[in-house]
Image 1: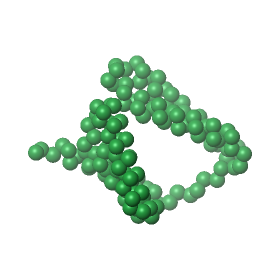
Image 2 (image 1 turned 120 degrees about the vertical axis):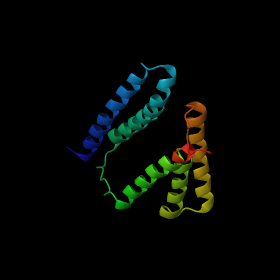
Image 3 (image 1 turned 60 degrees about the vertical axis):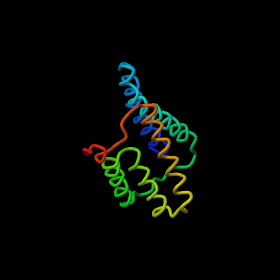
Length: 141
C-alpha cells in the first residue's frame, strides 16, 4: 500500500467513529448534545479536509519522525489545563510554545494567545455554558 493510500485509510478509519459519535449525540437532550457535537463536528470537518487533501496528493507522504519534545509539550498542555482550566492553561502554554519553541516575536505571541483565549471563552462560556476553571477554580474562597 502506498503512503497516499495509507493516509486515506487512516483518515476514513478516524472518520467513522466521529460520525458515529455525532449521530449518537443527536439522540441526547438539547443540553447534553452540545458538547459532543462541539467536538465531533469540527473534527469531522478537519477529517474531510484531510481526506480531500490525501486524495488530491500526487506525491508520496513522508511522515516526519516524532520528536521527544512533542510529548513534553502535550504533557504540559494536559497539566496546565487541569490545574488552571480550559481558558487560562492552553492560552499560557500556546504563548510559551510560540515564544520559546517557535521563536516568535512578543506582539505575535500575545496576539495569538489572546485571540485563542477569546475563542475558547466564547465557545466554552457563552455557547456551551461550561465552566472553564481547573483545580485552582475549585479551591474554597
